[in-house]
Amino acid sequence: MNLIDSANQTVATYEYDPFGRKLLSTGTLASQPFQFSSKEFSEVTGLNYYGLRFYNPQTGRWLSRDPIAESGGINLYGYCLNDPVNFVDPWGTKPGEPYTTPDAAAMAAANDMYEDSYNNDWEYIANIYQDKDGKYSYTEPKTQENPHSSSLSKKNIPQGTSYNSNIHSHGAPSEGYNDEEFSGSPDDPCDRSTDKAVSDTRGSSGYLVTPSGKVKKYTPNGSYRAGTVTTIGTVNNPKSTPRNGPQPTSGKGNRGTKI
Image (tube, one colour):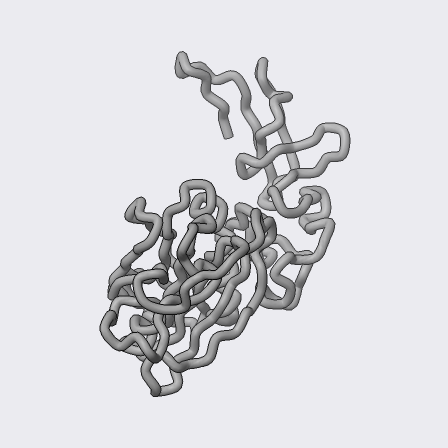
């Protein structure tokens, strides 16, 4: 791997084994910190920092448990399913692309979109899909740069996979909006573009990451907008608590996704 400067000159060259153990390091800027898999490396400790936990390339193991626990697999300290040639783990939250459950994929997607969504106060959305091996993953989070709306066709998934559900975010806390809940209630039958209506229409679950970092799941039960809502987890670095004061529970005061 080469590091190139603005004049297109090679200023550092690195060689690694598959698990990131450094075999060669040369060049005038070879000691700069961002090395294997573009993560910060400490010459003192010999560890790479991935934002959520530290990785030891000498052992091919994380130093701490997986933040999403067994949702990312039963090996809580293993790196990239012990197959870093074919899988990547950019944050230390997932052992590559495949997940064993839709909830695990939703948690990974929530962590992926949360910070940008909160900082920009835009809704982000991604589809969760199942591959031919029965594993789950998610599409790259997208935004329409809108604080109160997001949309993504269920057809927007890789070829050869099947749609499972979607997940979207509610950005930062907004005055007058019930950001901590799915939009759509049984007593508001007019708008079919709200969060719960999308899931009811598609006959599939929907996930939401709220401004306070909670990740919630809506499961349809056959009655319009009356399915069950459960909290499946919290993102790794939540930025806020819900805005204080009364907030609306239906109608225009809710954020929502479009079909």
